[in-house]
Amino acid sequence: MRYSENHHLNSDDGGTNAHVALHLQGASLLRAMEFVDAVLAAAGKFVLEAETPISPPDLTVSPGVTVLRPQTSGQCVYYDERSEHVADVVPCTYPYGGGCPHLDNPDVLCPVKDACYAMRDVARLRDAREAEQDEQDADMAAVAPSQTYETAAPEWVEPEPEEAPVYTTPAGPKGAPAHVTEWTAEEDAAIRDATTAAESVTLYRSAVPDSGRSDAAIRVQWYKKVRPGLCEARDPLPDFVGDVVPVTQCEEPAFLPGDRVRITHALHRGQTGKIERYSPATDNYLVAIDGLPDRIILRDKDLEVEV
Image (cartoon, rainbow, N blue to C red; front, side):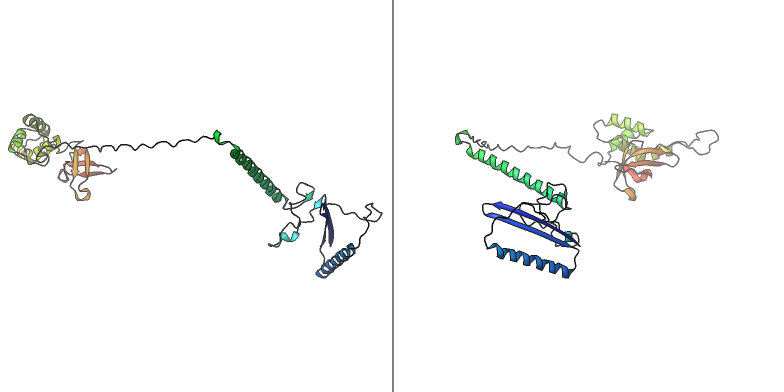
């Protein structure tokens, strides 16, 4: 069982106030109730006797008399240890306003002193800022009207509406484009005497200089119209001694590497690409599809000139 006590005397124009705090810890419930009753009885008796005027007490310390002074060290007597185990118990039981009296005394120990110290600093900063703001407001209110300047609002000028630009599309040549028109007899006659696809392009350009057909379209037309008859008219002689059947005669490809083509194969129908390589042994073309990393092998029947 542990017993501690503390008291405070505050004097002002209204008189003197006395506060006595007694703590009895570790006692049984019955013993604690007896302690409370004894303290209240002694305090009530003292109040009743105080109505009789008495002479000022002799403050001289006599032998055997204990003088209670403000706490200067040790565990703070206002700290309630029950707050460590009970949620609704306030840790600090100091009954007076103004905050903890031991906040600036490091010798008085309290588990919540750091939090109280931080709250006090925050309150001081807030009060200082409010005071500074009040001073600034007072200074602004004290400024004479002649010292204030009003800034005129800028005059708004409505911008003139801009004329909408007029776009004209140049008129294209009348009639269907060259790549969709049928070949005329004059155009077929221009490539009839060519023996190779490259020669057909040269002869066509010289005969029809104003035509808009591409070189690939001219070569495709030569392969369709001229090459079949040319291969039948030629004497199929062997290329080398010992060959029975000619190997390379009339085997020029319909498309050359770099030509732009459109795919007609069902797997990639409508997609465009570029001829990367031609394989004479299999008569296949390696086509790079536009916009895709894929390359596909197709025959000339699955390709047409890109429009």
